Image (cartoon, rainbow, N blue to C red; front, side, top):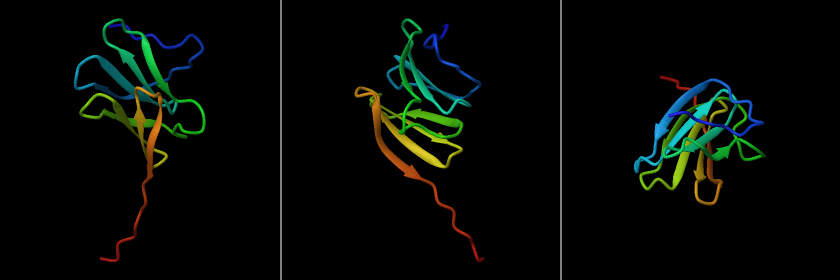
Length: 104
């Protein structure tokens, strides 16, 4: 399969890939702070979660689809997890990692 990005995309190194449970999509996260989804059938870019305020500010180093193939979860070195609504093409949830010091 050949994956195609949008002509103006500056797609950089891929850090993580995942197939959707139904096998119709392939997601990738990379050093350009974006999570993208391609259709397996034709290899064309389907969704690009890497633009605007809602996207990650650092590398995306983990992607996984929800069990129903309707959401994508991305994790980043910016210490956030984002849940993307694939059908509506927007972020639906967001959480930030926190660190706690251990005294033991």
